[in-house]
Length: 466
Ligand code: ARG
Ligand code: ZN
Image (tube, rainbow, N blue to C red):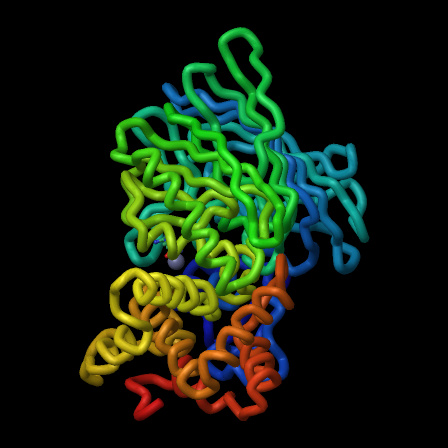
């Protein structure tokens, strides 16, 4: 890794003085959607991730004791080095590492902040395989906005939530959203609890008083979308048929202490159908939900199987399912592009409202647009924030969705939905930057749109007119 010193570093990151894994990138404040050279790496969390390699697959074996909240784990990282690396790092916060091997040979390692720095017996180049053995009591991670993520303990187990950086509390990883990989989870826990993770349930093996659950996520997934939940759940298995005619499994795991009914769970099928009509085919091999009584104040679009705290309301269901296209299948590389996830997911709620007797997107827009210049909605701009505490702020969600409505007003509904569908299709299972959406919108509508996107996403304050 090489040091990253740009004006985007927050005071906190500068104080931490950690080396960054990221490639040096232009300051985000100077980047507009029309810039040619999009950064290949996130610029908001300079201490996360390593641009020197790309992970292909994580094989995660966890042995969890819910009573002691103790984890005994081995994670195998199959990666490809972009150049010869004498050493590399994985992100890992807390826990104790007992051994690391690289391509079967013992490697030396040190801990530096939240980095696990690995020095293999000989430099890696091209494909390599790192195996990390680690154990301990995993920690929660407190974000700069005060919210809780990471390994969150519940009354009967735990749930792993990773947006934006919490995956490192249980998974040694290249913890940056631009690096997507496939996953296998083998989680051993007492047979008195259930285990859910992303993707497809492929096996369940009972051994004495324990059960090992095997889940596989075979489509690329960012670390922040990985989840494992362990606890007492009502398990529901069902299927649903996509607009493409493909039938996929639904696995829903619901904490019995939450008021989730079979009707709530059934709502998922309606939402999927609604969103497929507007966004195109659902991108993954399975779906479902995880409802767990974790004390966090948000739901999360954990890939294939969103997490809902305490209960599920339809708006949130619509929002998290929309993220399966926008955020999960199409994943931002730089957190400054978070509006590409939250703006679209919020817009999906507006579309749902309009179809179910609520306000139309134009009415949502007008309501918000009436807010005065001094309102928090206008500051900072959706892409202009420099403090990670603003990552899930009102501008990202509401002004992000307003950006889409401004686009729709400009190009018309027909072109707008053509853009949305083409966007989801062209970058399916990929990584995206705002400027790619600008170019695609210009191509489909035949209009110059960089000014509109810049005014709505980058310029501070309330845009004058739209
Ligand atoms: N992406 C989630 C949603 O809006 C919100 C995640 C918030 N994360 C956090 N650490 N506060 O659906
Ligand atoms: Zn969201």
